[in-house]
Image (cartoon, rainbow, N blue to C red; front, side):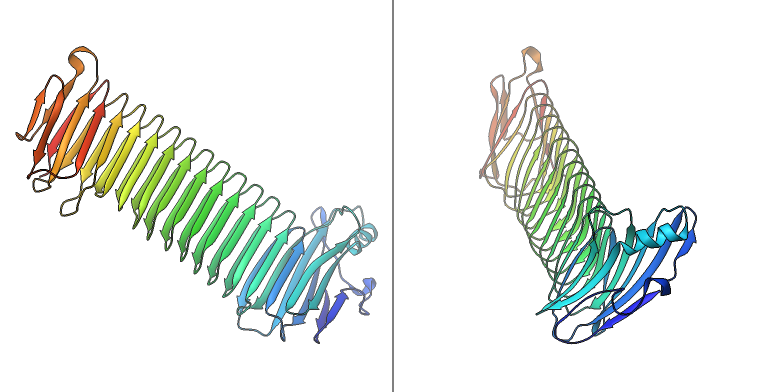
Length: 386
């Protein structure tokens, strides 16, 4: 094992050039691989930022320490220890200080056969961390400042970040725990799961599901093919999928949903606009302005008791529309069933709503905001909420 400790305001060294000769480094045979472990440390001093640029997996942990500590385990396939030593020496670990930045990188000539896994322990108080790996998984946790992590192809995990988080992977899953600030999570293909964010959040995947537990700011969600689920959002939600089910259980602001091939379910929200090309729509315990349209599928809207409704529109080109209305809600209803022949059915629990061959209309509790309903190839049901 090789170890180096670097002190001072400015330092730039390559480990293995400090008098620790290659012959003094121990390599071990593990199956078909030869391995070597290198350790190093860098006094943090005035450094408040971290930059990591490597190839391979990397783990970054924040702790109550005053230095940057690195453990790098590298491995290579070789026919004997001599060839393994030559190949392992072709890749060196480099630690440096430049102003506020503590830098960690790998020095290697061209493409290397050596792969590795790096673990870095840093002061939790760092204001900013930028971590990049060309390949491999990325795991970062326990930092108070902003974090930006990127991998060319691998999984990303992050948790207990008090600042803002940016996480990007060319292909792999993204698993995020608690983020105190805003979050921007992007993967070329894979699922993304977020437990909690404190600010505005953007999530995008080329193909995979999106799951959000609790968002403290506006949510912007997009997936090429996959389900989207939001348990709670303190503000607005914008969600898009090309194929899957979208569920938003609670939102403090407007919910705006587009689904090219799947169902939609929304719970509490200040207003809702949702559109599906092929799937049913369920609006459960909703109020405010409602706009829901689907080309194929049923619509169910349960209006929330004790909350105001604004002008709203519900429409399906192929399916039923069922609206449950609180008995004390003031609303004006106009319904049109454009189904062919005898299929133009409108069923109402309210005697105040007049139903005839042309449709249905009426005022409940003296009238109020306009609720327009349109359906084809199905039945419209106006139910009294029990």
